[in-house]
Amino acid sequence: MRTSLILIATFIVLLGCKSSKTAIDDTHPIHSLVASKNIEFIAKSASPTVTRGVNAAANRGLLPPGSNVSRIDLNGTSNYLKIFGDSVSANLPFYGERQFGGGYGSATGVEFNGVADNYKQDFNNDKQKYSISFQVSDKSDSYSILMEIFPNNSSSVSVNMSNRSRIQYNGTIKAIEEDK
Image 1 (tube, rainbow, N blue to C red):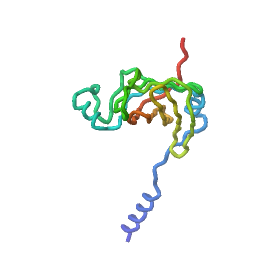
Image 2 (cartoon, helix red, strand yellow):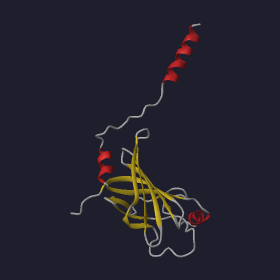
Image 3 (cartoon, helix red, strand yellow):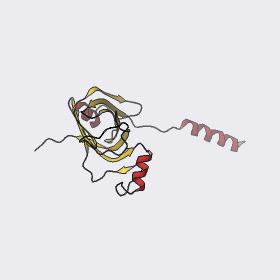
Image 4 (cartoon, rainbow, N blue to C red):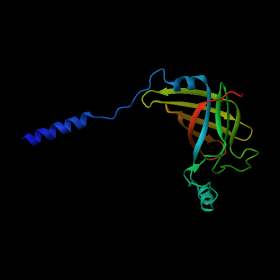
C-alpha cells in the first residue's frame, strides 16, 4: 500500500512539473534595439534550399571548409543586413539556384539597398521573440524578408526571392555603429 501511495504521489508531482520560460520584462535591451530600427544582422551560417544543383556543388567541393549541403559556414565572410529607419540594405552570399531563365545581373548574392515595403514588427510574448517582415525590390529581383530576433541577440533571416530559391541565414544582431 505504501509503495502505491509513493508511486501515485510521484506521478502527481511529475504531472504538475512543466518547463518554465523566463519572460523578459519591458526594460530588456532587445526592446529598445528593435524599436530604434537601427539594427545590423551578421550571418554566421546559411541554410540554402537543398536542390540537385546545390548537391552537385557540394559534391564537387565548391562549399567552404566546415560546410555541408544544408549548413554553409559564413564565419570570416563579410556580410550584413541592415535596418536603419525606413531603409534596408543587404549584402549576403547566396547559395542556391535561379528559378527562371536569364542571368544574375551584377548581383550574385542577396544584395539590395532601398526603402522597405510593408514593414511589420511584432513581439510574440509566448515565444519571447520579435518577428520583423518586409519586402524590397531592386532591378533584378524582389525579396521577401522574415527576421526573427531573440533576447540573446541571436537571429534568423529567411529570404524568399522572385527569381531564386529560398535561403535562411542564422547569426546575431547589434546596433549599427556610427561612422567615426
